[in-house]
Length: 442
Image (cartoon, rainbow, N blue to C red; front, side, top):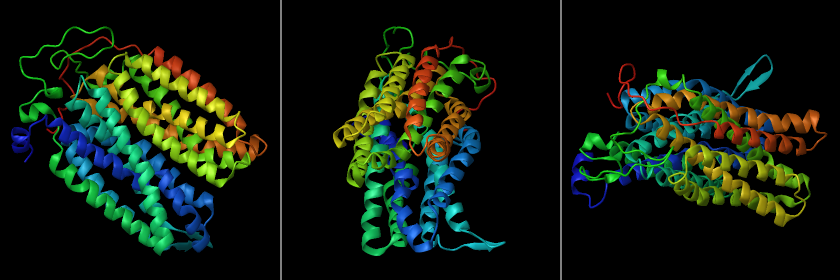
């Protein structure tokens, strides 16, 4: 099907691949933290669950993703992104629907264990944080080189759309017919939006269909570019994972990205509560979250175009400084207008956090073994998220005297460290090796 469509389409087939990846990126928000936040109140009210118990399922899924990511990356290179993404969407559909039976539990030694909820939601979080996050950016980065930044920016926009719409859909259904039906509806949305596009349209590389990256004609030659800029398909790097792990750049990029996701998880999870603690009200807190997601989507396009023109390490440093300033500005917030402006500013940086690292990994290490390389580095991201969710709560409860201010100061400092790490992540010397890793789809 892909070959026939590629031959008949009036435009480059890579845009079909991007569209399919975008649907998966949109649909993964069925297991997003903003989505589960809509269910916290009805679940706690009807089932008597504590907020900590509900949040524990998300933390469990995040920690599990830390261990599964290296395996997922290898599977993408061995069996192809299409196979991994299709299986992931099927699992996400099933796990989301299974959450309608969240009230099924076991009582062991007097303790009630909601095992269906924990297994189903943790599974969804693994899909959210590992195969979909890695698989979509890897396959898009294989189809685009010159336009890698803008296409990953579009992926960020699709994620932003899901961040806004999935909680909205869930809220409407919960208000009309309850939380059980809401999970069913979300599973149907995932099925309708993502399954067929991912299964039918995803192709591993343009070369598989007799095409070149970006839709360039065979005879086209690119001009030499400056340091860290895009290379042509013929000249692009082709690192094995074993060679990549010996480069400081890989670990500096992974460390910087992990620190950014630490800031993201902690700030986004607790910002609404922080604004309410500041006496700004529930409405302001809710609008600030929406603005954060909207500006994340808008800025994804901006950062995507910038990283096509400026070396990735400089752009990532700029993203880190944006988030550091945003975290510090939160400490100055005492009016509703400030809360909205600072949330939008922080969301603007988050768009770069989603777009720039995938582009940097692909630019630095090439396309053939990108899944394995991304799988090796992704645990920094998932662990950063898991820790980032927990630290603000610990600071609030035990260290900060019932305030989040120390966390935001900490986050600002970490953002500066991430900027420094990014600047030192110099693109390694290109080497070509086919001795160890496996080409995608073989």
